[in-house]
Image (cartoon, rainbow, N blue to C red; front, side, top):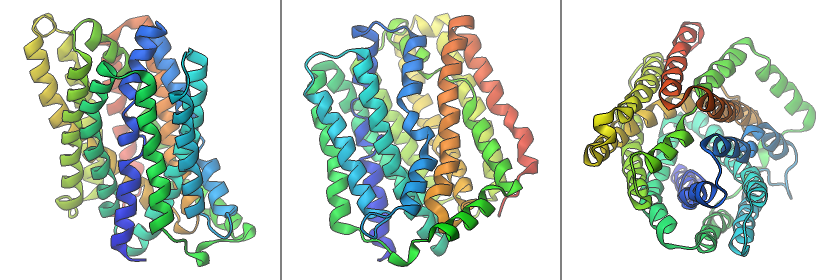
Length: 401
């Protein structure tokens, strides 16, 4: 199978992923939690952390994919199956007339199982082919460029959907995105039968790779990188209640942020190939901290009481830190992929990324708890400081040039 065809598949799967077009209902869900269920910012943060549980147990999906092929296929058939399950979850929500918080939490959590499994299979392909062809940066860049393009669409469209469409209509539209992935996979993708390991071979390779001291240090580093307390949901409430941003405006700002991310993905894939990777890691950590502290400017009275200024600052924030943040994110993902053993790519890369996702879940819970205790401003400061603290781990990491 040609590298070009893999690039197409990687791009399309990520284009329709929960980070891409399947994020269309996200803003509607946020308003559903806030305006219909009347959840506080802390409760909504807890809801968000629980609903992504499937992403925290990605090693399970990797083990299943690596060890238990469906009709000789450990990638293609699982990708089709999980995409169809994700479609079914959106269909249930589209056909539901009256929502309650527990039903929504159950369906979204179950859909996260399907989407996470889909992501594991795609990433396993990416690591296997990317390391073999020395194309990890290129593949990562293409995947997240596709995500950014999709987010440009869903940012404005998501705001429009939240403003104009019934929740059922939005969920019905989302049904077609994972269904399209299933169709694309069926038509374009094929498995490599020689890549399937027997259990004893898998056990030996996986155990050797996962217990390596260097790998464990990398794992701990990636967890801490993502664990700084999140202020995302409290800040969303602040934009709505204090800055008086409308649904369409918030959606438009999300699109602008995606433009910044697309620029970052393009820069990462095209212009940073010769940059020392250790320098990129340090840069990524610094950008994470600086981007966090920039959010404090929105709490100042002269910004809070001047909506045009707040909007202008948001546009700058979304483009500049959207681009820099994407470079940081792709640096971390590529670093994780470099530390992955190709023979057990599904399980091992899933383990690494699940550690990142566990950090996100912990970040959501911790951020929600701290917000209820100290408020938004101090929470942003704590988040920025903890982001910068992981710089002390960089000298201990073995990093390829």
